[in-house]
Length: 460
Image (tube, rainbow, N blue to C red; front, side, top):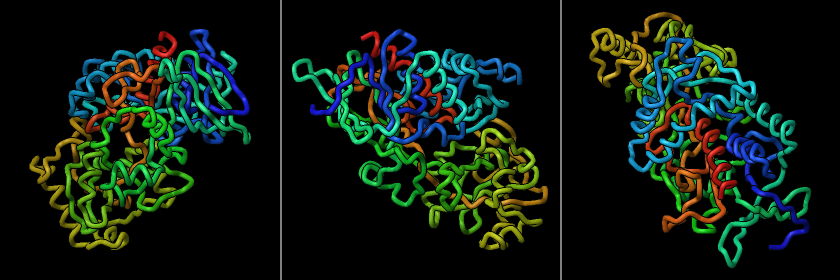
C-alpha cells in the first residue's frame, strides 16, 4: 500500500447511500470511530432516485388504515417472490429486524404517506416517503449526534489484506488529488451500490439485457463488486437479473427514475401492435421479462379516468397526474383517438380494450387477470373517458444482484468461507431477492442489512 496520508478508524464504510448511512449510525452508536467514503459529490446514491417506498409489516400506519399484516405474512410473501431456498437466510434476517428499522426511521423524524399496495405484496405494505428527506435526516443525525461527516468525492480504488492474517485491513481512496489509506481496525463495509451504469459489467453479467434502458445513479459502476472479486468474493442472483417494466420510453437525464405503475391501479399493458401480452397484476419484473419478447421491447400502459383519479403524490410511481402535467402521458376522449395519437392500430387497440372489458366483467380474462396487483384489489373494465397512454419500456435502474454474504453480512468467497474483515450491504449484495422483487424491499434491505453489517463488524 502506498499513500500520501494514512488515517485509522474502527470501521471504514464505502458508500454514502442508505446502507452506508445505516451502517455508520450503528457503528457510531456503539462508540466506535467510522469513516464514510462516497465517490460522488453528493450523498444518497440510488436511494434518492428511488420511488421512496419501504416494505414493513405490522406498523401503526398499517393498523390505522385497517391493514391486517404481520412479519410472518411478510416472510411468506418474500419467500414466494424469491422462489429459491437460498434466499431464506437473508429473508429471515430482514423479517427479524424490519420493525426495529422502521422505528429508527420514525425516531429520526421520517413521516410516511398513506400505505399503498404494489408488486408481490399480498396486502398493502409499501410505506412511501421522500427518499431525499430520509437521506437528509440520516446524514444530519450522523453529523450532529456523532460528529461524523461523510467524505464525498472520495472514490475507493482498492481493498488491502494483511499478508499474514489475510484479513481485510484497509482501503485506498482519493480525495482532493491525494491518495489516502484508511486503515480499519474492525472491518470494511462495502455499501457502494450496484452496476447498472457500467456497460462493461452489464455486458459481462447480463448480455440478455443489451437493449434495455439503463438508468439509475451515475456512480453505480460496480466498483465495490470488482474490489471484492479481487479478493475472491462469490456472487449471487446474477442469473435472476431481469428488467422492470414501467419506465418512460425516452430517458430523462434529470430524472433517471420515470417508472409509472398505472397497470397496478387498473390499467393494461399493450405492445406496439395494440395487443396485451401478460397478466398485469403480476410482478413488474415478470412483466418486464415478458416485454422483452415484444417487438422493439416497448409498449404502452393504457388506462382510463377512473385510474387517473386514483393518482397519489407519493410514491411518485403512482403519481399519474404529475406525469400528465409534465407532458409524458397522452390523453384522448376515445380509445380510437388515443391509438391514433400514440401511433398504433386504432382498431387493434379498440378490440383489445373491448375484449379485456368483457373478460373482466365475466371473470374470464384471457391472461387470467382478476386483481390489480398480486392478490390485492379487483380488476375493473376500462370504460370511463378520458383515456390515457404512457409509452413504456423495460429498464434497469438497480441490479438486485452481486456479492454473496451470509446472515451476518460477511462477504463470502467462492469456497463458501467468510472473507475476514469484509462486510457488505445494500444494492451491492445478492441473495436476498432471488428471482423476484417486492416493492419496498430494496430500501428495506439497505436500511436493515447496513445495520446488521455494522453490528457484525464491531462485534468481530
